[in-house]
Length: 368
Image (cartoon, rainbow, N blue to C red):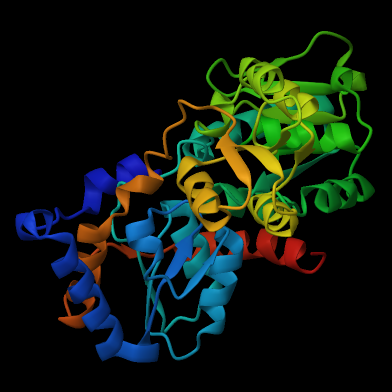
C-alpha cells in the first residue's frame, strides 16, 4: 500500500484547534508530554525536518540510522517518527513487538518510494527473468516501501543506503552477473559508474511503459535502473552548477548522489547527507560551499556555520513538500493523543512483509 492509499483508508484529520494554536502553546504542549512520558516516548527526527520539529527530536539522522536508534530504545513504548512513511515502516520492522511507531501526519510520504510499487515490481521481475534468466539480483534503496524491501528480501537481495551503496553493489556482483536497482535511478547510476561500470552497460526499466530502455545488445547490460527519482534532488541542474562556477569560481560544490549524473560529475564532491554535514563541519573558516540537497537542511547548516560562505546550489529550491507535512501542530496532536491513550496514525507492517523486508535489511547490516 502506498502513502496515498494509506491516507485514503485510515488517516484521521487533525482537530482544528491545533491548527489555530500559537506556536509557543504548541511547543509547551509537546514539551509537557515529553516530560510526562520520559523514556517511554522517543522522537527520532530526520535531517530534512523543519526547525520547529527537529528541535524536539531525541535523535537526528538519516532514515535507517534513526530506525536503528529507535530499536535500541528498549524503554520506549511509543516512537513518534518525525520523517516520512517509509522511514516509520522501517522503524516498525526493526523495533520490538511491544513498541508502537506513529507518524504525526500520514500525508508525509515519499514520491520516490511510491515510484515503485509491488505490482509494478512483480511485472518487471517476470519480464526481466524471461530476458536474463537467473542472472539478476535485486537491490533497493532504503528509501522504498516495506513491500519493495520485502520483494527484494524474498529474492535474495538487500537494501542499500547512500553511504554504503558502493559496498552493497560490490557485494551484489559477487552473487549475480547483473543487478536491478530500485527505486532511484540516479543513486544506482552514480554508484555503479564510480565502481567502473560504464554508462553503456546500464539500462533503465520504465514501470509505466513496462519496457527496458536500452540501445544495444541486452547481453551487455550489467545494471538495470528503475526509472524513479527524488523530486528534490532532481531539481539541481547543470545550469545551477555553471551559474555557481561563473559567480563564485572558488566555491566548492557538494551534492547528494540522488542528483542527476551530469550534476554529480560537474560537482567537486558528492555523498550522503551525513557525508555533506561532516564535510562542512570539518571545513576551515572562510571556506565557501554550494550544497545540493534539501533546503531545510541547507538553511540549518548555514545557520550553524556563520564563519563559512554557504548557499544552496539551486537558489530557487523549496524544502521537501512531503517531509514538511510534519509540523508543530501535527506533532503536538500526535503526542497528546498518545498521552491520552487514543493514539493516531499507527504504522504497522504486516508480519509476512516485515519478515521478508528484514531479510533485505539484515543482509545489508551484516556487511555495513
